[in-house]
Length: 329
Ligand SMILES: [Cu+2]
Image 1 (cartoon, rainbow, N blue to C red):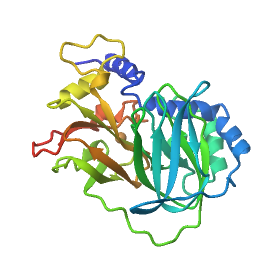
Image 2: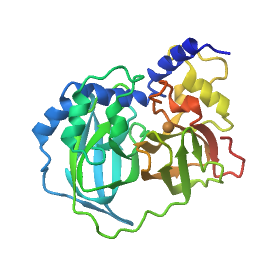
Image 3: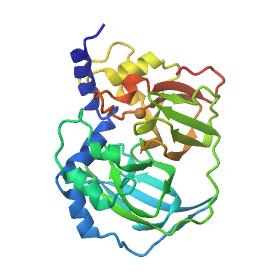
Image 4: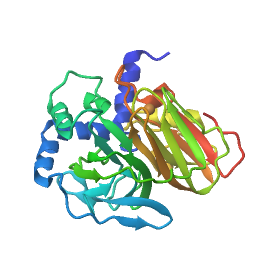
C-alpha cells in the first residue's frame, strides 16, 4: 500500500504535467484573482460591453458566444470574444483554440444572491490553504463550458446562463488568460432543451452513463452534475485497448518520470472536448465528434476536503465509441 505522503507527492507531480493538469487552470484563475486582475479587468472592460453580435448557429436555435484562444506573450493564452453581451438562456459556447497548447473555456458567476463584486471580493481575499483549491470557486456559479480543447481545434458546449454577469476563465496549466466579462441579458424566452443521445451523470465520485453503447460520430451529451462538488468531464482519445489501469497510471505518474515500458505517454492522449467545471445541479451539453475508438473520461477537480483530484477518487473511466465492447468504468 502506498503511504498518504507518497501518494500526495505523486499527485503533486501529476498536477504539474500539462497533459493531465486541469487544476492548473483553476490555480491560474485563483492567482490572477488574488492579484486583483479580475477587478482590474472588470474596471477596464466594464460590464456594459459592446454591441451584441449574436451569431445564428445554423441548426442550433441558441445564441453563440465564440471565444478564440490565442497565444499571449505575457499570459500564455488570451481569450478574444466577438461580443460581451449575450441573451440569457441556453448559450452555445464555441472555443476556437488557435494557440499552441490545449485549453478550456469556463464560465463563472456569483453564487445565489451574490453579485460579481461579491465574487471578486472573495477571490481577492487571502484564504488559508484550502487543500490548494480556491473556495470562491466552490461558492460561485459554474455553468460549465468547453473543456480539453486540443491545439488548433474547436470544441463546443451549450450552457445555461441566467441574466447577469459572467466571467470567462480557463486556459491551460501553463497559461493565465485574463478574464473576459460577459453580460447575459433578457431571458425567459422559450428555448428547446438541447437534444442529447447520451446522458452523463456526475456524482461524488464517478461518471454514470458511460456503460451504455456510445456511437462514433457527431453527437451531443447531456452532462448533469448530481454531486455535491463542482465536477468536470475531460475526454481524450487513447490507443485502442487502453485499460483503466493504464490511464490511472498515466495520470498518477510524476511528470518527469521515465515511463515504464508500454506505459501511456502524453502523446497517447488526444483531447476531444468535454465540459469544464460545473456546479452541483448544473447541466451542460458537450458537442462531440468521436472517431471510432477508445476514450478516457476524467475529472481533475480537486476535492477540497483532502486535496485529491477527483480522478483519484473514482472519476476516471475508459470507454469505446462505435463498438459494442463493454466499457470499463
Ligand atoms: Cu469531479
